[in-house]
Image (cartoon, rainbow, N blue to C red; front, side, top):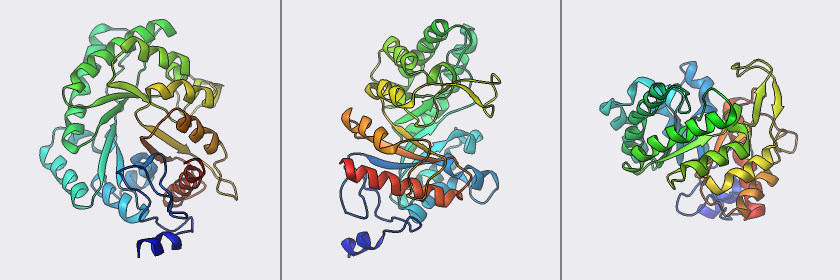
Length: 314
């Protein structure tokens, strides 16, 4: 019966109910082949639905499994910003995961201050602001929180300050069994050599990187304006290669697809080959951010592409 379901799930628009197996790699439904990586769903893929009130953070785990067949989820803290210490809320969220066989992978944390702030007191406050998310992540069964390594000053100054902030936060997080992972999220952090250099300065196995396929803009036309056009782009494939020795999770960003179902802005085969060759076997989180497809169709298109290319390379 399982094989029949796998064989019948060829359409991009059909939920792949058996797409993920969190034991050892996801499964390509077209071939039944086990992939070299697992698949998770980043909550930002559904940010329009959440912002519009069509669904909530509590709905996310069941939506991931029921609609897309994905049994691992990555939360975004802004969707439950005031709930980090709300034990009743977290217990409800955890129960919904446990009842439906969904694993909580990580919490993406924004808006808690600059871990690379030039002001030592503000930097320490940013570190402490993340403590509640470390505790929430442990309670939910996650293995990491995702943070940013922003700051002010020259590349070397921010590198030193970010390494200090990350080291302090990671020292706290490791007592909770959590990793602290930095995403390439614009500015210095989107420079592969720079962020790899920060990791070398921190030099803690619990501190790593979350490579994002699409965030390699190191300078925008308007500083501090995320929507401003990119003025300087770092090579995404070189950057990903530089990140992989420290990768503890990966974000498969996608905006648009061609008629063959290939991602227009990123060569998924090239990216996944970089990961396979680096020996990566962890989660790759789907993060659809486009507007030409609906959020559900964009998620399914990204899932189908990961499954297809993953099967070719596994």
